[in-house]
Image (cartoon, rainbow, N blue to C red; front, side):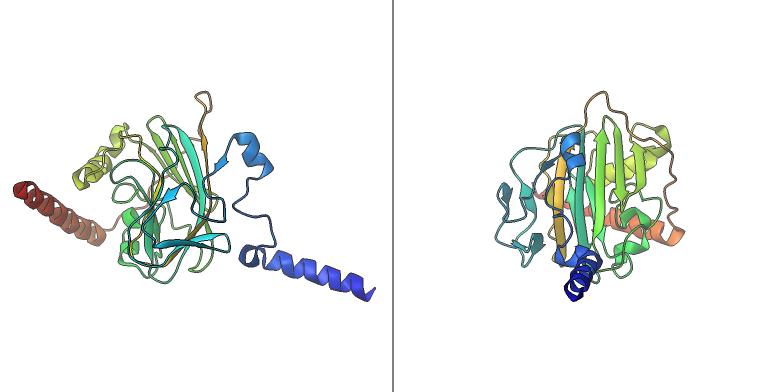
Amino acid sequence: MKRLWIAFGLVGICIFHASQVGCAEDPNQLTKQEKLQGFKSLFNGKDLKGWKHSGNWRVEEGVISRGGKGGSLVYQTRPMPDDFELVFEWKVADGSNSGVYYRPGQYEYQILDNAKHPDGKNPRTSAASIYFCMPPSHDATRPVGQWNKGRIKCKGTVIQHWLNGEKVIDLDYTDPRYAWQVGLLANRGGDLADRGANLSLQDHGDPVWYRGVKMRMIPKDEKLDRSSIKPAKVSDTAMAAEQRKLQRIMENRARQKQKK
């Protein structure tokens, strides 16, 4: 009986600490449902085979982390398909900033500590935003140090960002209602119609961790959940700050052109 109670106790501890010590299923392995949906693992949980970096990224206990200057971690096995679903888990330290780039230019799923990083003051540059373009509907992040589950779905002209099981962005970038937001990103140097980039995880000089990076191609006949969500409101103060930032970006771009 004593052994039975010990066994039950160990199971309970394992379940309670699953997300931290790995007692639950390995997030880097495909679940049965993911296999049926056609997902492929982009990170094997052991090393960075298929990825390119400058020695500043490493793998420890099934987790990707950065540990020095050197730039983004780029998946080089194949470019991102036009229509895809990408899932990944991420967590940050206090004040950390990173991003998941999945199409050319400034296409970015923002990774951020909303509470302490300055970008968190503006929903348009907060976690799960299409950075400097579309804000999420609300802040769905978990506390710093806990794992978040990100999801990106792209099909045709529709871009969706999900965070911790909640759809927070649903953008058809040809919709005239969002022409201003699309133009804002274009002024920063991003074209939402671009395709064919390699997936990359941004090195912004801050501690950040990733795991469970998986992707599938979305079939042509599959329909997305287009339930309506409303982007978070950007305050006048945040709007003024982003306009000043955009002005600096455009001035710097003009200087670079003059040098050429």
